[in-house]
Image (cartoon, rainbow, N blue to C red):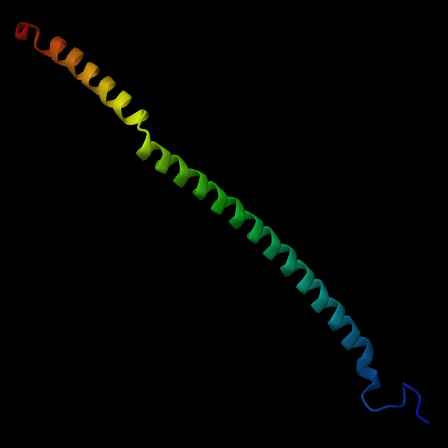
Length: 88
């Protein structure tokens, strides 16, 4: 019967064990990075979904656009009255 040391290639076992541990470490690191990236992607998708919902709500029940239009008209009237005082 052969001992583990007398088998062909037995001298490579320690090196292969270290290589396997290094590969496991790399896989663990890559797995953690992938999970972080997937979590960031999920957060970004949720943010985009909220923005889309806000846009859809704004289209159904406009609030900001008419208020901004009124403000621009008021500012325009003030600027016109200041820049051309004889127009009144």
